[in-house]
Length: 198
Image (tube, rainbow, N blue to C red):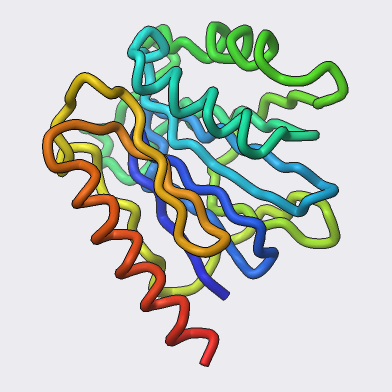
């Protein structure tokens, strides 16, 4: 089973029900989970909070919706209480106005009429996979493939880059050197998947 851990502004989709997709911690970000039950195609985009107006963010979400043609979308909002801080450092994100309502409207306008859209809040996201044509929320393997942080790719004129390796699609913000970097990451992932399946 392959496990992918997706960083902010990145997305992954797969037609393998042997794939688990996780995210780095959702402090203020959200997970946009897409499933096409008939094709058993699962995707997740790690939405960076307050960035819906960015062309790369909109482009990645739209490309994923067009590729997956989801029958179900789950907008998994950041947990409003962030654990892991000492008493003096604890933050409460309820005081920050996040844009989940706008993201929901954006998704509603772009999904097919037969696609359901569910919003989940007040629960910590651990991971998701497709099993028996349904979403199953669980953690993956102990050593996931990291789909890297957006800091590693500089922005350019083309706001979205999509790379396919086998039955897995990777969605990136693009810029100078992004295509070569995406191909390198995709090759490393393909090598790991071949090792796991042999």
